[in-house]
Length: 312
Ligand SMILES: [Mg+2]
Image 1: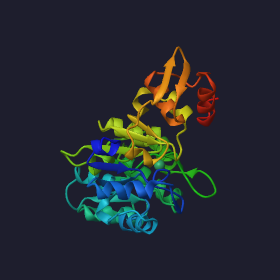
Image 2: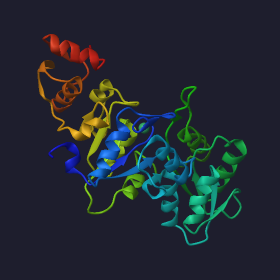
Image 3: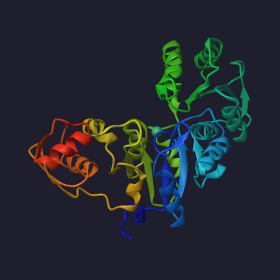
Image 4: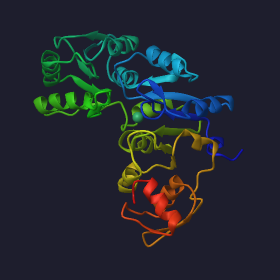
């Protein structure tokens, strides 16, 4: 088959907004990942969320119907602990600002997780709903004393059922303000997490719903990317994105893996869309033409496509 999937050996897939939204699977995503597995294309589940253990993430995925094992899950906790292990001697004390799941990853890498600044030669900073002033103060003290500082991720917000809440990036900002220092970052859009999920010699496709994390991270890792429109980023965002956040491929959802995604019958000339086809194909044509969001339509089909894309 000459569909998109046939060009790859591995999908490095984001979770929230790509495979699930809260407690529900994203429509079409389970079938797409299962079909990939049947054709020998593995899926690595790559998440910036550092608060859950890989085994818990895998269990959630299996419950939703995904073919996932603990080994298939890559979290920013694992990537952050690996970054520390590459820089520190075995047994070095690492101040863990985050959950016990993060402390476990630090211990698995042969380092010693601690909860106070005394003796700590490094700080690892991941999301925990229990982080307060005392923990931030210990981290500040250790970093001012010269500790290596790694943030699992710098997402400003965390999606919750009540709306966006302060994410790890917001807490990192507190320590940045207090120390005047910047952390090394493991999670997307930095390439470290993605590169740990990628295997040399495989043709990997980075898949996600956010231009500023998944797609930028895939580009930084030097890998092709697929944006799905099932989560955060919108068609307008795509056309406003800087070069470093532009995806290689765009799909309405993961069903695009069994298609040959092109511009179909759309044409773009001087900021005017004409022709016919699906709305997402019109978006591909606009992106390929370097169009901004202020595009005009020529014909009823084009009018409808732009309306469907929120660009009307
Ligand atoms: Mg996402």
